[in-house]
Picture 1 (cartoon, helix red, strand yellow):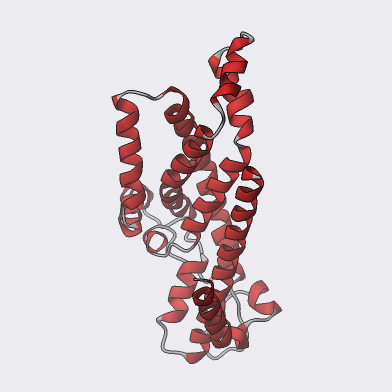
Picture 2 (cartoon, helix red, strand yellow):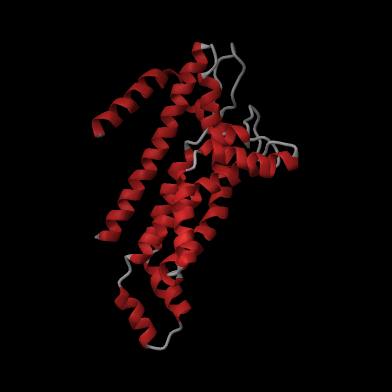
Length: 254
């Protein structure tokens, strides 16, 4: 598996190395024929929409995980777990169509908000399931000790169980970010993309996956090279996030 990853990264770097320079990360895309140009707006757009997605999905996901781990033992909890697993398996393009119907059509405009909501839906089941599993790893003796000294269950959950699982929650969040970062289809239906520098969440917004898609389907060799360079950058970011996840996981079990 490591050899396959090295081959993929090496091939992308070989195809895109000519386009990778400082201006590639700091400049806006330029029309065909003009030298230079980069993906700065796409990097910023992806970051903004990911922040929106985290702010939407993390509180809901953690609260749902706490309920499933600490309080949910009946049919409703089983139903919630089942629906979470179903949501995790829904194709991302369906999520994009849902966000398009829910947000883009009423707003009559593609927007960063719609892209953030779509990514939040994709991240939510990952956060719920990973956080629930991390909460379950907290020894029952810690819960019993808190209850034995007279602390209410909600206080034990917050001060002991949740505090002991912070690194696990961070791990689940990073995994969810890695899952959402490379999604293209939902953003095509929601944020759409832009060649301009925009941080306005109510307007169409650039993103790295859509920029890669735009470059890749063009008939121009120069844009193909930029597509490979942007793809290498995206995979490198995801690789770093997964390395951080492994580090946090090892620290947790160590």
